Every structure is written in structure tokens, then in C-alpha cells.
Image (cartoon, rainbow over all chains, first blue to last red; front, side, top):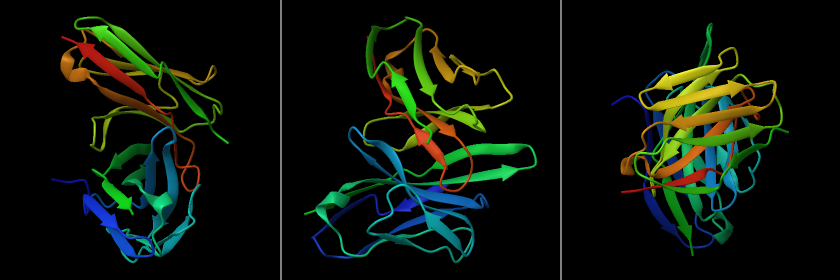
Length: 115
Length: 113
């Protein structure tokens, strides 16, 4: 099925460990982004990319790195996990064409717990 | 900075009722507004996308309206069913880049059988 695929679905990390959350889309969308969802805080933008080789920070980028080597993939790296990074992470992609923006498609999420 | 507010935060109604969920945004310079549904422990499913030039969009029993000048959008659900129980999120798209999508905190809807 076409869409946004995130792996893993669940992950438990110890404080200080590093890991990469994977995100891939097969819709040839130029724009990709990462959000975290926390109770009472809603979804907040971490990092985004407007195309291969181009990334930038969102609202809450500290502690996370991203890269975009291909149009399809946009991994999110946690450098040294902290309990404050316990959250649900969503990857999203979007396409803007001549007729405007066609809306965002979200992955199913990665539930991360840092102990 | 765009801010999105959803009212009410929670709603419980008997099956069969028509209901309205409200979404307001502070910056009217949006490209579009998107309504999502989120089931517990699941991802976001797009329900309706309204472009800034449109007034409303319909999909089955769902109808979403947009009034940019007043900074408001509503999601109307007709003949509610227990399967409609979920959290409904609205998100304003103010542009690409760091603007991205600004989300409300959602309305948690319970439809009683």
C-alpha cells in the first residue's frame, strides 16, 4: 500500500543510548517532517525537509538529528536518549503542486519509552 | 505564530445524534486546513482537506467548513455511530518549512451505543 511507513512501532531505550527511527514514503513527496505527540501538548514539529539534501529545524529540535539523502527516506536520530524524549513519534509527508498543497499523510507512529 | 484551539476537548453523545466539532486558528493566512481522526494508540487518518479558497468539503457523513476571515472551521458528523468514537484533530497549514502544520489538541469523542 502506498503511504508512509515507520519502523519500529515500539522501542524501549535506556538513558544515553542512541537509535534511529526510520521513515519511508513511496508517493514521491518532496516535503517530509517529524512530529512528536505528548499528552496535553498536541503534536509538535521536530525537523522537516523540503527535498533531498535539505533539512531544517522545527519547534522542538534539541536532541534529534535528521538527514535526507533520498526523496523516499527521512530517518530521525536520537543522539543520547533522555526520559524527556519518551513520546510517540510521527513521520509525515506532503506534496505541493501547481494546484496547491494536497495535504499531509502520516505514518502509524513509533512509541518510544526511555528509561 | 499560528495557534489552533479545539472546542470541546471532550464530547459524549448518544448514537444517532448529529454533532459539531469546532476549530479556531489565530492566523488567517493559511493554505489549507485538514481534519484528522486518531484512534487510541494509532496514527492519524486524514478525513477532509479544505483549501483556503474553499468553503466546505464533504465525505460521506462528514462535512467540514472553513471561514478564513473569522479563523474558524467546523466538522459536522451526521447520524453518529459508535465507530465514530475517536479523537479528532484539526491542523492549519500555514506554509512549508517550519510553519508546517499547527495542530489543535483535539476533541475526544465518545458515541454511546
